[in-house]
Image (tube, rainbow, N blue to C red; front, side, top):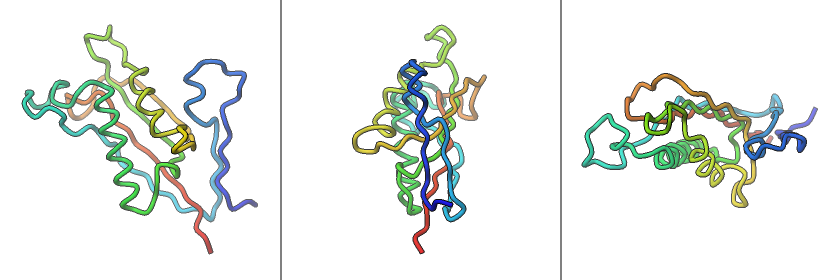
Length: 153
C-alpha cells in the first residue's frame, strides 16, 4: 500500500476544456489526515452597496476570488495548503441578468489561478451544481473543500 496521495487525471479523450480543471479520482492512503471546511461564501466587496445584494458581494468572478482566498487562509491556518485540496464542491445561483444560468466560465477563470496552475499544479476532484438560492441572498457561489496530507512518521 502506498503512503502517497494519488491523483488520477481526467482522461485525455474527454475533449471539453472544463475536463482539464479537475482530477477524475483521487486515492488517499489511511496514513493521511484530512480536513473538511464548511461552505465558504464571499465577503462584501462594495460596502457602499445595499447589504445582501449581488452588488454588495460582487459578480461571480469577484465572489470566487474572495471565496478561494478565504479557503486558502483557513487551510494555511490549520497547516494545509491549496495543493492538499482533494475535493471541491461549488454551489451556484444564477444571476437573472445572465439568462438564468450560472457563469461557470467566470468561476473557472478564477479557479484556474488556484488549481492546476504553474504555481499550484494539483487538481482536486470537483462538483459544480446550480441551486435555487444560498443562505446569503447576495451570494452567487459557496464552496466546500476537503484537503488531505500524508503524515510523515
